[in-house]
Amino acid sequence: MKEFRSSKALHDWCSKIRADGSSIGFVPTMGALHEGHLSLIRQSSGSCDITVCSIFVNPTQFNDPADYEKYPVTIEDDLRMLKETGCCDAVLIPRVEDIYPDGLEYDLDVELGYLGECMEALHRPGHFEGVMQVVRRLLEIAIPDILFLGRKDHQQFLVISRMIEHCGLEVKPVECEIVREEDGLAMSSRNRRLSPELRQTAVLLHLALDEIVRLGSREDPHHLTITYTHRLNEHPDINVEYLEIVDSESLLPVSDWNLCKSAMVCIAAQVGDIRLIDNSTIY
Ligand code: AMP
Image (cartoon, rainbow, N blue to C red; front, side, top):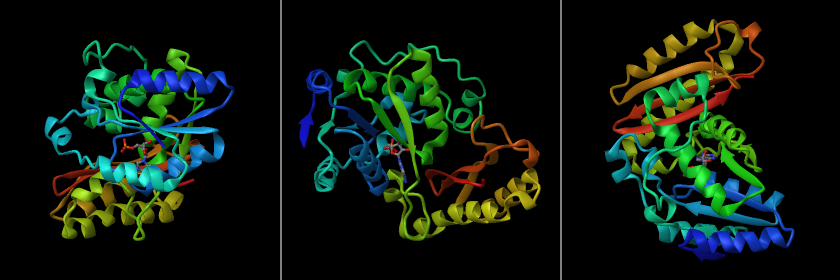
């Protein structure tokens, strides 16, 4: 596995690979890697000749500076895990100045419509602007054929897909299934900040989503979200930011099951002082 600290060096390497006619799959991450990340690497390696991963904690997507400061950084472990997959060909670990040589200012004007007004966009102002900015830049550097993203961040997948269309980039975004711990908790870099007690509590988010999926279209969607938000909030260490049943494409809230082709339930909650998100497909 090749390690690049400079985006120019990676870009030159990727340009040669493309010129030779090989395909590139790209997996952007913020590090503190877990099986969820590695599943994207494996899927890339199964579909593309060369797999490139990036590890970059992007400052522009953190609306809360304290969250940025506390974001786990475990580069040595990450490199070991990537090597152990045996299928990651190159990793980029850039510095902030390397990614943003002209400063941190957001300079895209992608029309997100409702995607930019609901759920994560509403609760983390500026977050998706930072995500679009960094992914756009990373795509310029790695020039991949396919971009592999996780469904855990489904809204992010839709936002990045919109950005790719807006910018006319020739890369195909692919959404990969959520990888979970044995008890169902969605894997996340932030899980490692949970104390043993909060780790027990965190699984309640998944259990609530699971019950909602099981009850599914037999119940009124609005009633379901109100009931489960209230139940989760009764726990002293849980504070639900949103719990919504939405159309998987538009993310508009589902009010009538019959009018929605594909529905999912999405949640964001503070567990102690750790913010977690998850979602589950209803149909
Ligand atoms: P992050 O490092 O959190 O920015 O995530 C990098 C990529 O990994 C994103 O496309 C995420 O959606 C994806 N990802 C994170 N957690 C999981 C998971 N549990 N299962 C599948 N993909 C994930």
